[in-house]
Image (tube, rainbow, N blue to C red; front, side, top):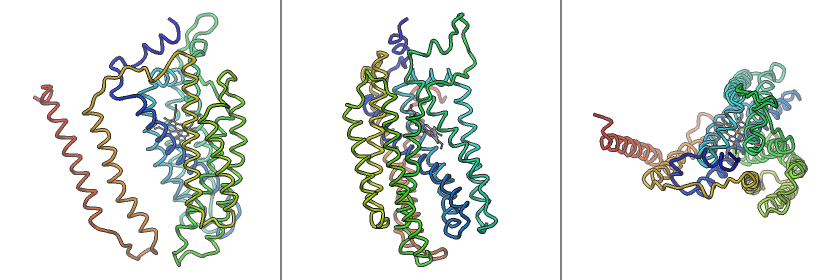
Length: 407
Ligand code: HEM
């Protein structure tokens, strides 16, 4: 059986419940959100270690704040990792399932490592909550940083193995014909790509610090000198990390097969141009971190989104070499489940809007003071949640009754 036939028969025989381009767009969008949070978590962990090593008051205060960012951020990064995972499994199922079978040991270890990273993050945050400059410890943050890098390495390897179906056979069948069922394969490491994805951790964290300085600017219990320290550190870090990420991007480009002519790919070109513009804009904002924080964040988001589109275009290039395209995946459009899916999505955004606004307003006032918030917003969010439960449970009961599986 040739490779293209293998890949195409490995697809889900019931086809896709909706058009592949929609899943692909959601895959790229949710991957962008996932990787931004991953970058924030990785950058915060390393910066917290650095700030504690300096043993000064501002460094300690910032490290404590970053301890909080890394624990909350890690939960969000993990939740946001599930979304692209679902979309990859839907449109690239032959690739994802083969990679996670070839490397089952690493795929499972990934889960263990991420769980431990989460605990280590909490160890750092809780352990230093009441620490002073002399008693603060970096041990748990070092453990978390190491484990986070392992997590990134494992998922990078699983992403890369998917792009190399032409090697799958040689990886598991030895020259003497013995087949390996160990699930311990580890292939495809591309350091240029991994670094191009991880170095922006310091750029994203830098922009986050600029936003932090702008956000707390009006709080009287925040020392303006501390906010100045944080804002300037953020802008400089964002600038240098973005500039270095451009270099790593060219390293990655050099590793891509020449026959793809990827340097001429429009998405790559727009992404690279945006990377340069963003770096220049941050460079021009070095002395106005608070004023320019939101613009820098918008530029950063746009660059990462377009770069994620380019990453997807690269995946399609690899897969077309193997005779696979998501655009000819059979579609059996299932409108009711699609409508329910999108309605859930919109409802989720609406429900999350309330805690997001509440958290934003709460941070604007000192501890113990009451923040102003429209109370009807919370009632509407709870109402939407109840409505959603009634609809989903109702539909489930009706369908089960219709199919005769309840009684
Ligand atoms: C917080 C720890 C995590 C880190 C540091 C991390 C890091 C990364 C990195 C660096 C990539 C890009 C790999 C590449 O394109 O070469 C990536 C992609 C991805 N991650 Fe995460 N990740 C984390 C957690 C998770 C979790 C918990 C999930 C799933 C539940 C997940 C799902 C994904 C998916 C689906 C992709 C894209 C794979 C593809 O496009 O084929 N990640 N992650």
